Length: 222
Ligand SMILES: C[S@@+](CC[C@H](N)C(=O)[O-])C[C@H]1O[C@@H](n2cnc3c(N)ncnc32)[C@H](O)[C@@H]1O
Image (cartoon, rainbow, N blue to C red; front, side, top):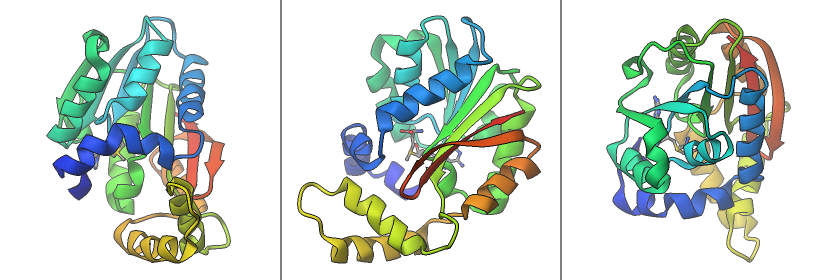
């Protein structure tokens, strides 16, 4: 949670994040399509870790009949989300807190983007169960976050993700130092652990749709 209460980190979030995540705009478009496959034109979508408002903005612009409930424990990130959304806020209800503070729905779909790697396995499992409880049967959940590719070597792959976000000169030595710090700070699971956690939370049809260095995205059915 720390970076999401630091005013400097939050101020730079909307500008920095698209540079850090390979295919960021495409990830949002793929997320929209995976939700739209099942959701009607007047769908109600739950967005967990909604602070910053970036996926809310992309989804609200792409689907003008959708309404959204967003939940996030960081007030600073929620305030940034309000600024990013501007007039689109009319279709968005933002809640300060964790998933348990989200209204029960039921929702036609849910997202949790760039968030689950901050949650240890047990907390993640609880959060995923709470999301599933709020979804209509069969409704899609789209998640994307850091996950360690099969074969291990988390630091190597995190170095690649960090170097990807670098400004110009490739500096693998610096990226490797940051990767070590990141690997010890974040409870990143392996791809198979991530998929098992989704299934354990009650989701089925778990399917990988996105991969870029350590980033992975899955869609699953409630
Ligand atoms: C990297 S940001 C991602 C924000 C947004 N989903 C995006 O893709 O730009 C991670 C967000 O997750 C929020 N967060 C941290 N722990 C959380 C939790 N247990 N439940 C929901 N959100 C959480 C943080 O406050 C932060 O706003």
